[in-house]
Length: 329
Picture 1 (tube, rainbow, N blue to C red):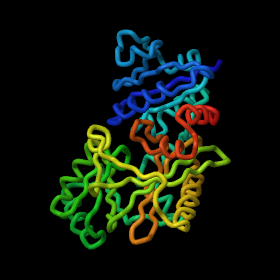
Picture 2: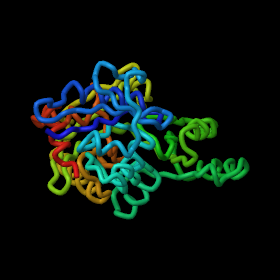
Picture 3: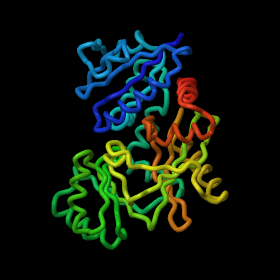
Picture 4: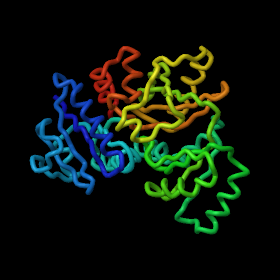
């Protein structure tokens, strides 16, 4: 019986979401097919092996291990490590260095999709429609140049605009700006998470559509799900602390829109060289479709869209986890 290593925690600001995802994997794991090893990634960069599920969070009951121990303990790695270092190719490169099979996207696609600025340039080159955007690297810009940039931006992007860290997820560090007077504050809020900032043009009454994609070569593309917005932007706390997101599966769209979005999701997945599984996100505004981003390690929490989309296709949590493991290489 193969042993699967569930990696969770991590050094990012999304560690708590990672733990929520891991708990759902533990609850729905197929213990008749595989053995499960719990590998907690501490914020200080250390790895700990838990033998008992009930001991999660009790470091004193775990064994500290190094990356050289991974192959001694497990056969396949299943990362649920959202955010920086766990989702951007860093952990994936460790798995490849140790010649360990793992689930999900490889190093290149993980890094590409995590860096919103680079991803948008790739999508631009492919001619896929997306919102207008600008990138600032605060490591290369002084206060005077920043003021000049903000002044120039007023003539280029219509309000509202969204200011985001280029390398982050789960709505961490994102601010919606309705007045240019608030832009500098939003930039420095995003800077807490990344020195590279992306500024995106907002849309009029956008609908947020998400698609689950599963597979390496032969892809399963889910029906579409929609985030029903009670307000125009959801923060990290809205999603994971207050649980204020609502979803509609399947989304109510025309057949033409459904076909176009599913085809775009598959194309973007392949273009980004994604493997295993990912979630592809879109906006629709005034009937026009905009690709937003690809999440190469989507959440598996109770409110996460990816497992809900697959469940709508008849694949429950246990079957989904088994399928993801079967795609590891």
